[in-house]
Image 1 (tube, rainbow, N blue to C red):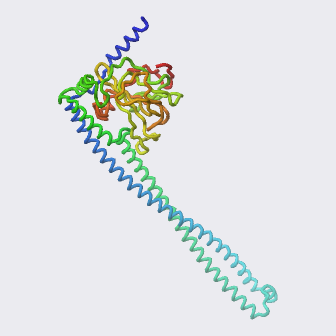
Image 2 (spheres, rainbow, N blue to C red):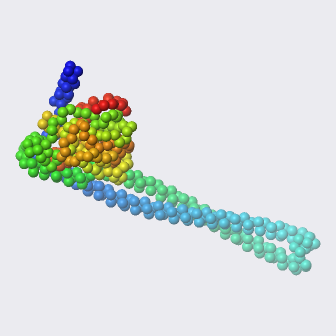
Image 3 (cartoon, rainbow, N blue to C red):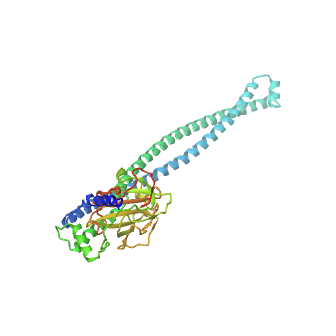
Amino acid sequence: MKKVMPALLIFLLTIFLVPINTNAKTLKELEEEVTKFTNELQSKNNQIAANDAEVAEIEERIKSIQSQIKEITNETTILESEIAESNQEIARKSEESKSLFQYIQVSEGENAYLEYIFGATSVTDMVYRMAIVEQLTEYNDKVMKELTELVEENEARKEELAKKNKELEELTDELEQEQEKINADSAAIRETMPSVEEQLKSAKENLQYYKNLGCGLNEDIYACQYRVEQANNSGSSGGYVPSAAGFYKPMESGYVTQNWMNNGHLGIDLSNSNKTIEVHPIATGTVFKIYYDNCSWSNCSYGCNGRARVVKIRHNVNGRYIYSTYAHLSSFGDIEEGQVVTPDTVIGRMGNTGCSTGPHLHLEITTCDWHSGGGCTWATYKKSTINPRTYIGFPSGLRVWWYGR
């Protein structure tokens, strides 16, 4: 009993000392937040549309440039072939002229030798043959000159095409860099999840949810929600939520691979050599949301393995709600929204769905949620995260195994 009491005391102190909700607001404040957020998102959506149009234009320009480069490559190939053929013809004509020139030189010697060389039957025949040789030599010289000029022209054209090709390749690089910047801008606007469209839809549904509960314009919406839902044992986002009786690790064993707020990371990442190990709630609560996120190749910087399976659970801690989120699941457990779950309930299995670098469980704890009934927009949701280590005793280091929950 003495061993149990200190642990219980620490747990109770943790529960009462942790700020359960730092986002308490009235219905009026939520309405103002939703209006402001809606305008911001619509502006971002317009920017994304403009970015997409610019990227499409760049892609068309790149296609046009690539077509020009292809034409230049084909023309260069033809020129190289013509240059090679011309050089071969020049070499052949040069050999012919050389032979003819030797004949002319020989013709200046004695008649008997000339007759022997040329096989002439008479001097007249020899003169005739000499005239033919001279004409052929002049013709060959003319052809060689023309071929040499053609080779020079082709070489000049080849250099011109090479210069143009380099300019087009440099322009392509510039356009691709610009395209990358625009896509990065759009990705930053879109975020990983949820999409702009989802955020707009949920923000408006959230506001309507609290209006439907009958919360007063200046009433704390979280206190109103808790009072109404606990009293009625109902509610579109889970209804009655039993009190959390302690917090547990979500898996029987594993290790931490990334900490909360590491480079803006909203949760903590956990993994295990068993890539499909069962995942459990960190505390008693009610299933708040079961869904697939909107991950796609266009807005995921890590690579997308299909839309991520996500489970959200609402917990009752000292009369206030907190939310735990379990993402990248390979499968869902036999659960449904509104169902009461305990730390023993299997809500799914660890996986690699969505924007993910490998099988792991992404665990978030927040004081509100951006879905209907969660009481905040996505912008506020990101600011409401709590370090899971506040509630759960994970090993202090990374990749340090734990065994037992």
